[in-house]
Amino acid sequence: MINLTPWLHAPAWYIAFSGGLDSTVLLHLLADHARNHPTPPLRAVHIHHGLQSAADAWPAHCQAICDPLGIELQVIPVRVGPGASREQAARDARYAAFKQLLGPGDVLFTAQHRDDQAETVLLRLLRGAGLRGLSSMPGQRSLGQGYLARPLLDTSRQRLHDYACAHRLQWIEDPSNADLGFDRNYLRREVMPRLQQRWPQASQNLARSAQHLGEALGLLDELAMGDLAAAEQGAALRWAGIDSLDLDVLKALSAARQRNALQYWLSQRSRLPDTRHWAGWASLCAAAGDAQPIWRLADGQLVRSQGRVWWLSGDWLSPVGGSHAWVDPGTPLGLPGNGQVRVIAGQSLRPLHIAYRQGGEVLDVPGRGRRDLKRLLNELQVPHFVRPRLPLLYQGERLLAVANLPALGQADCQLRWDPPTNAQGLS
Image 1 (cartoon, rainbow, N blue to C red):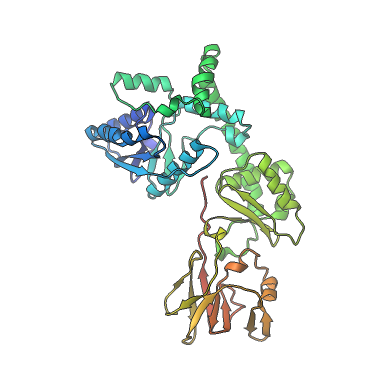
Image 2: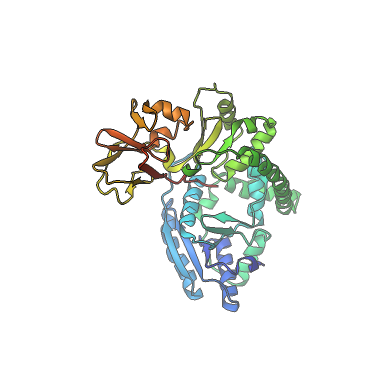
């Protein structure tokens, strides 16, 4: 029923085990394979969302299934955040937990099957999804430091049910699956049975169409990579670790190619915006030259500065400020929400502290005298969103150096800054 060869050399295997029919069959298949073949260590992971009282009994059920199979079970409670879609919020919480769990090269197996594939295509079609949304769920993709694998995508739900009955497996029936208020439940219980009465191969054909769309998407991705290769050239501030694109290069493309390139680029960083939300991109491009437009997305934002668009997320979206005394300049100083700094100086300097721009700062520049810091940053074309985060090194009231800008420091005193990682969201 499944081919596990591609993942035999992983450091560890995990299975997302809800206790339902699909994941119970997958667990049984993996455990059977592990008994008869050399495999990586196998562990089951149950995510406890706490969304309904019935769920409190499910970890014990999962444990009772795992124990006879000799499989370790890890139960991870998660908090489902508020949102318009409880399904999406639960999925986000679940996959965030999986990402934290996986080590380098580890594989997480999930039990999506052919009918899930077909339902997903139809559901997204009804929501007006584009090619990227309609293409098939991949059999494997990266997840955190490891991979997510779906070995049952070519298997029907009926075949899984037949297997479970033949092997007398026990599984949980989630009461929420009967709630027709959820779109997928309504599609599964009310729409798909009628489609299959008329077209018995409906699920299989929808899944096959999704594969065809996936192939088409692959060609568009290749086009996007070529367009992005040119737009990524000339990136400044590589030390900041911020991804950026040349706006003029993008604007030279047709509107369709712009969108295709950006969809590919953003898909690795954020959940993609719907069609209406793409107006934010048009506004960002059309804003006046001295404006600082922002396109806010689900997991970060695009900002425009110095002729480029920059992706900001994580700590880069949190404000910084205050003054931080540097008791021991011989060791790095951690800055709340802003990485860390270290000083390189030819002499002992005390007392030192780190502060941020307030306006009106003046710096003694070797060979140029006292200069206004704002003008100096303009000369160096430092993006506007970086300036409030740049650590400034002071000795008392005297500004000695600006982080990572050698031209803005004394000859024998430089400030090295390791910025916060530009943490990416769900992809």
